[in-house]
Image (cartoon, rainbow, N blue to C red):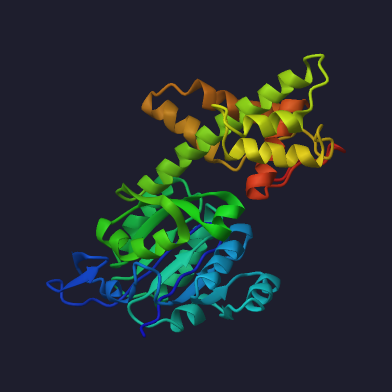
Length: 356
């Protein structure tokens, strides 16, 4: 069976090769699709019944969980990461280790798909530089991390000049989603998306995957998603701060549980608030300094460029800056929520600096 490559590193990226006759067509899930050079369509089972040989680079918090998910689905996964400890840990669960990017690509047969997850910025470019010498025309590279959408557009143009397709996959759902079913927003060439859509849907919850548009659209939608997330968490934090200051002996855990069941403001973030408050109703184990990883700032900057008013999101970003100078209960709630859904670091109650 042709072997398909997948690899993650704290931001997603993919590659595919081999060019069949563009006039050919294949059937997938009852649909007849033109192959347009993507012979890989022949090897994906939309029902997830056919195991794949997958490569996965990047075993951070999200990447490690994603590989475990793939292993659970019955796929053979080839992994690569700078951390030998992480590689050994996931290999013990059934993954196969690759010594390098060249080794990983060499383990795959045409057509290839490479899926990487690396931190936004220089790390993405470094991985792409290490990959492209070994990729062929028609390969697909997917970036599933939180890259800035403008950077994604530049990368897509650069890879297109080499005949390589570049998909941006905004990924949400936190550590739980990576492990059991995520949400993915995809931008890039539509035909390339059609190639990998069955795989993405297998990794997502039902109705949790969609094509957003041209290159950069997936990361743009994810950026706005994270801006909304900032505002929602800030509102929850402020609400609990008001409860804390009310003069009543209100049990925050009880409030979070009640609000999580049947109320208009119920949802996953409220459930996570309950989970954090079960540990300590006053969240005294952490300080109120809230780190930010960039997407909120990019959302505000983009709104300024486009002339769009987003006062709630903007204020939530500015509040993170002020949280590093002042400590109050609302900031501790937001810091706790970030830790619960994404495993993000927080400033301990002793006042040391917050980590992202």
